[in-house]
Image 1 (cartoon, rainbow, N blue to C red):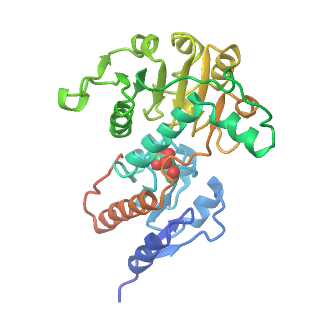
Image 2 (tube, rainbow, N blue to C red):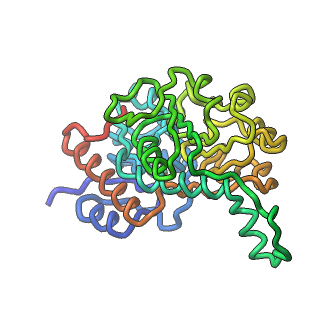
Length: 321
Ligand code: 8YV
C-alpha cells in the first residue's frame, strides 16, 4: 500500500474530523493542544505535505521561509487567514486554503448575543446575580439601550455580515453598511450603502464589524472614527481584534461616547487588553464565534476537502493563495 501523506495537525480537532483524517492521512497530532511556536512548527513539519493550522498558529514570512521543502500547503481550520503571510506563502509556491461559508450562522449568533448583551447590560447583571450583589430593584435599575427599531451599521457585508443583517431585521433594525463594493439589490434587501466608512458611522446606533483583518482594515476603528458614531452607540466585534484600536475604544467606553461594547475577538489573544475587563459596559467572550459542534465539524470537513485536493494535485475549493 502506498504511504499516506503526512499532515502536521497543529491543534486538537473534532473526533469525527480526526477519524476521516486518520483514514486518509498519517496525521502528526497535537494531543496536548498546546500552541506551537514558529521553531516547533518548522521542526514538526519535517516530512509533512500539509500544515493543518488554526488561527492560533502564526505563520509569518520568517516561519514560512523556514518550512521544510516537503510542505505543499497550509490548510486552515478557519475562515480568517490573517495569521498567515500569504505573500510569503505564494512566493514559496505554497497553497493556502480557508473555510468560508460554514461559520456564518454560528458567528452571526454570537454577534447577536453580544449586541443584546452589551445593550441590555448582561455582564453587569450576571455579575450581580453570581456575587450576591442584587439587593434592590427600582424603575431606574439596570436601564439599558433598546435594540428594536434602531439603526445598525455593518462594516463588511460579506457572508457573516449579510446573515447578521437578516437576523437583525427580526428586531426591526434599519440596516446601513459599508463594503468595498456595493451589493446587488437582491442581497442588499433595502440596506443603505455607504461608499466610505466615515459616512456610515454617524448613522450607526449599533455598529457590528464583519470585515477581515487586512493591511487596509487594521486599526480602522481608531479614535477619530469612533468619534463619528452617535453618542451612546454600541460597538460589536466578532471579526478580528486588529480592526479596533483598543486604547481608543476603552477611552470612548469610559467617556460614555460609546455606551457599551460586545467583543468576541481581541488584539493579542488570549492576553487581551485588561482595560476591557476593568469596565462593566463591556460584554466579553473568548473568541467563540464559530464554536458550535455543527460548525466545528463543518469547518473541519471543509478543510479536509481542501487538503484532499492539494494532495491530489487538484485545485482546492477554497484557495486563498
Ligand atoms: C475560529 C475564526 O474559531 O475561522 C475564523 O477565522 O475566527 C474562528 O471563528 C478559529 O479561527 C479557528 O481556527
